[in-house]
Image (cartoon, rainbow, N blue to C red; front, side, top):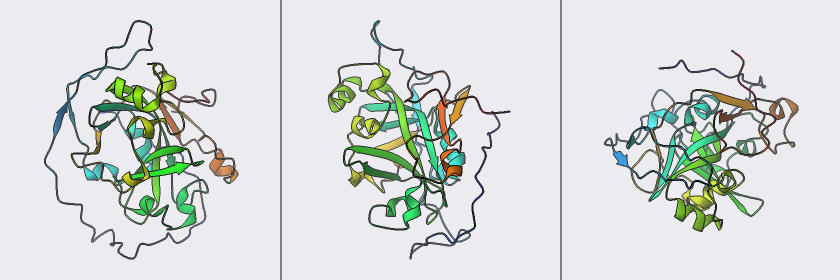
Length: 261
């Protein structure tokens, strides 16, 4: 197994994190009741000769990731999500691009504290946080870390694995090119999500799930997209991660580079 990379954290002033009224101390916290292991089988999309290559699953069996997988810093969780699979009914997507949003991050929704809109991001890691951007785009995030921290990983792009016709119907695009699943709101739309999916546990069978998948051989990193309102140190932080060998990533691509050794 490859050794996990550690990515640069931006130094920020220490401040108290918002605390939920029912937040448990880390030492006392207990994970939800253990779930039985579920191996799932799915059919691989067969791309047409005139379409972009669609990744194949190396094994027909995919296991739901456990609750503990998500109980880490968003900056560590983000690259670990690359190559994993999102599944809802017949649609399976492979995660190809993500961005990390951390506590004390001036680009994170957690900077507003706990509000009706942002409350899900302060929940325990492994839950979904779905919000509406510009009143148009449904953005899917995976909550990271312990309850009350206020951190998440935004899913920016995916590649289709199965359910291509359903994806195309929901997206309103009859194409199998990367434009189908790369960019604002396209993942939420392809999965048929709404903001009501916020707080949904992604580690339990049924509904929306995250499944284990292959670790990418190489990744690219770069600054996050569309956060010019944030502080300079957060605008420039290299907290965007993509699979290096895939065309299924969003623009801009010229800001991406291999991580330094």
